[in-house]
Image (cartoon, rainbow, N blue to C red; front, side, top):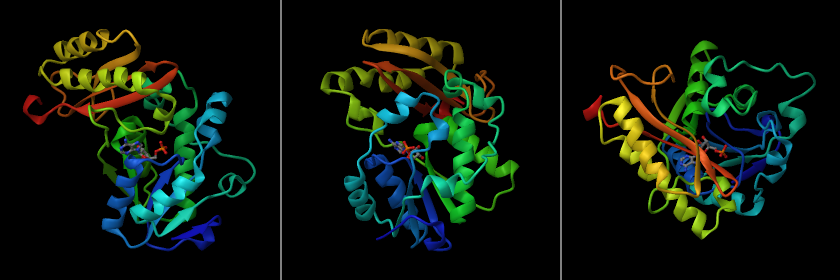
Length: 268
Ligand code: AMP
């Protein structure tokens, strides 16, 4: 595996896996999926300051360069790309807009977050010119907005969706889980229980109530939102919505967690 900083050193016809480092098995599965598509798998690690509206969150973001290198190599990356800030953002930055969807849910308490995400992803695409780029469903709103940007800007890159990898019991793997102790992790399993409860009713109202009831059983969890969205618009789903997804965000012991799960087709 090659380790490079400059985009001029990147291979062509690549499958790109953009990350912010602190790599775990979720990232590994994206890399393995990329390897099935292309020999040239580029894993980028760039902690994008533009998507953090809170400086302490940016400073607190975990950094594990040595284990990242091993995980990328062992998962099949051919190139580890460590872009430098001056190549990503030379001079004035023209920020992309994430539109109204960028202001909801994950965007609500973090103004400019999705604009920062789209801006960096577009820069990574412009520099690496990948044929494919792989993103996790774990960050479903991000995936939705990236797919929308690719369509609207007519970009050539093909976006591949990757399933969420979970620990036993259903906790979605996340770099932020580093800040959770054993007890916190056990409490966090309520998120998966609630997402699963949402799938017990075809009716959006009942499913939402089931999710909220499940969340209320865990006093250590503070819910920010727990709703069912229409996958086509990212608005709140109605019973008529074709594909629906339950999405949850909240806090455990000062750590913000998000997760989501599609509602099964049988109920659509
Ligand atoms: P991050 O480094 O957290 O920005 O994540 C980089 C990529 O990995 C994004 O496309 C995420 O959606 C994806 N990802 C993060 N956690 C998981 C997970 N548990 N399962 C699958 N993909 C994930």
